[in-house]
Amino acid sequence: MTGRPFRVLFLCTGNSARSQMAEALLNWKGKGRFEVESAGSRPADRVNPLAIEMLRQYDIPWRGRAPRGVDGLERQPWDFVITVCDRAKESCPIFPGQPMLAHWGMPDPAEVDGDEPTKRAAFRDAFLLISRRIDLLLALPLEKLERLALDARLQAIGEGRQRA
Image (cartoon, rainbow, N blue to C red; front, side, top):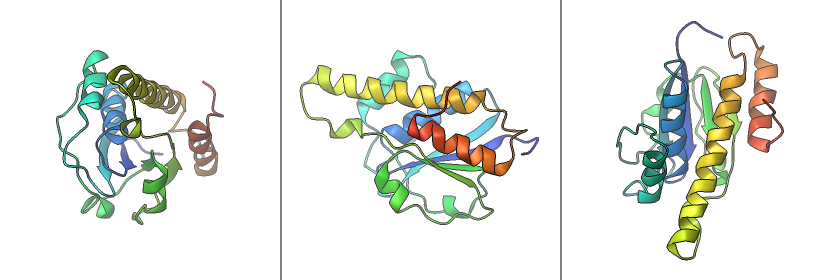
């Protein structure tokens, strides 16, 4: 695709858990190959403490950025826009430059009811799923794949059909 870092935007509703974890994971695992941001269609007041806890537990650096909306980001050039929840997919704005759009939907761990161990388990499951999907993304020969093949592979990652 290009010699510069790939620009990736992760979107969810609140930008308080899944998209924040995805941003931190790809920034860390991508080792400079990616410039990653995250945003929400309806940003929450704060990042969920359990999302921060997961990142710290696995020694993933986190910028400490508060949840934010897509205002301003929709005018920036992106190579990839990845939604991680169904609501964000439905309200995804139009981005210039025809970025690759992928949907990696997953349940919102913040909506899990139960005691603290149950909630932590939901965040761990979401974190590990995001991490696995990012590993699959990183295994793709992004510079060599044609657009249609890359689009199909990105969708397959979100649907659990892509293998390393």
